[in-house]
Amino acid sequence: MTIEWTHSIDSLDWDEMSELYRIAPLGTKSADWLRTAYSNSMFKCLAFDDGKLVAAGRAVADGVDCSYLCDIVIHPERQGSGIGKQLIEKLVELSRGHRKIILYAVPGREPLYEKFGFRRMNTAMAIFSDPDKAAADGYIQPEASFRDG
Image (cartoon, rainbow, N blue to C red; front, top):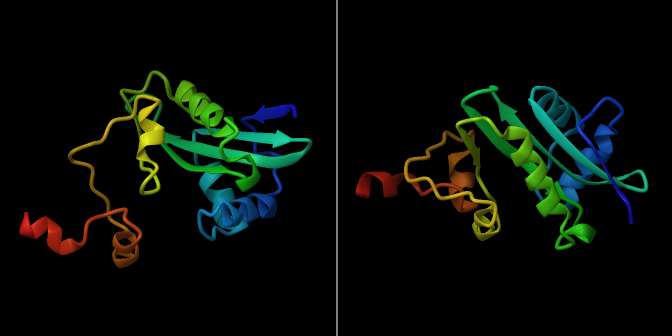
């Protein structure tokens, strides 16, 4: 197994990328959606094994203040193999020099990212297009929690 890493999306099969997110499982993301998201991201990192896409991630960054790691995906057959660790290390290294590197994890996966130095934020907040689903999936507290203190 020889992993080939690249930062280029020039010859990427976007349908293969979409399928990777579906089976990971990280939800349904169309090839067009992913092409737009990755194209608009400062940093991209992809891993191939024998020409097959096995891991990918990106960082939306401004070059000085903030880099946001997102859409980290590992093929189910490769999860637990260390390739995810390498991917995070590569994205963090690409993001060095920013004042802060941010990510939000799939609920329950936070301990993984703590190993890389990520710490919980006390004041992070988000607006989701479907807040009820985000709350049900564990990404945000139900709206009443903020008011009830």
